[in-house]
Structure formats: structure tokens, C-alpha cells
Length: 262
Picture (tube, rainbow, N blue to C red):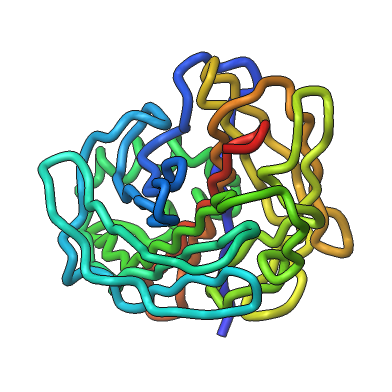
């Protein structure tokens, strides 16, 4: 089966935060008892909450801390955010993650053009759409994946947060991202179905000033970003595919952390 692939594009100097419409999970500083509050939202202005998903949309969710794994609890729904509170034990850097149930969407002709522009679609992908001819339909099935890191307790190293958690497309940092400081560099490896994903376009958004940059993963699936400011960061990427039957599919994936520790 032939697939046409595209990844979302960021404008390097934009001041609007996340490009297009992203979904992310962000961890708040843990409470005194170690409870970590996770917020899941969709929006265009990271890290502002805009539209919260329904709890029953989560297909799979879990967390890991100090080598111990658990399942995410059901969240509390709000208009702008889905809130989950995770009671963890121990210290280190925890990682929480979730994948959502696939959703279908049908776009009108003018909406497809806007969508292609938003994600910076390649000429090949645009040509695939144009070649469909009169009466063409744009039916897409998309799946979203989110991942967040949170420092819990002291500063002890916790290498368990650097192991993949099994998302369809996943960002795996080389070092604890919550330990990064302004002036340092974030290095991640992109995995697709458990294997490095060369060439994948990855964007990073600084929540402090809205600056966004885009890099493409190298031959080993590795990409780096300068961390120029402390505070929340969003890492994201989108893969859009056209299937042989003329339908479309995509995976959206994001990762968040707070540089400078929590």
C-alpha cells in the first residue's frame, strides 16, 4: 500500500505558540503528598487551556515513576480541560501518557485547502488530493497521543522516564527534560511503532514566549532543540497519510515538560 506522508510545519519566529490545533497533557508541580495533577486540553495557544476532551475518549493511559508503572485514573471533565490526579509514591521524574480513540472527520473542499496550508503539506500530498478529481471526498481518521514529564520530590536521577511507553509515534528524550536549564539543549529520538523515525518533522514551542521552531529528525531519528527559556515546553509532530482507497489517516503526538525543574 502506498502512503503519502506529511508532517506539520512551524514558523520559526512565530509568537502565537502552538501551530494549528494541538492536544497536549501538562503536569502541574506535585502537591505535598506527591499527587500530580495532569491537565489535558486542545488549543492553539500553548499552554492555555481551551477545549477539554471527554474522559471516555482516552483509549489507553498510564504513568511511570522510579521504574513503577500504573494506570491513569478517570479524569474530571471541564469545558476547557480534562483533569487527572495521580497519586504516586517515591521520587524522581515521572512520565504520564495517553492515546485517544480514533475519530473520523469529513472536510469540505475549501476546508481541505486550509488544512493543507495549516500543516504545510508537501506538493506530493497536495497533488494526491488534486488528482482525485471531481466529486472527491476528504474523509480522515485521526488519532492523538500525549505525553508529559513531571519532577516529583528530590533531584535523584530516574532513568526509567527515558524508556519508551509504546505510543504509535513517540518522543523519547536523551536526558531528563525537567532537569534542563536555559542555554542547554533538548535531544530526543522520534519513534514510530517502536523504531526510529528518520526525517520526521518535529516542532518545539516555548510556553513562556510563544517562540516555535522546527527541526527534522536525522537518519537515526534524532532531533535537537535549544532551550532558550525556563518554563513549560511543548514538542509536537503530525503525520498525515493518504491511503490507496482515497481515505486519509493521521497521528498527532505531543510531549510536554517544564525546563528548570518543577
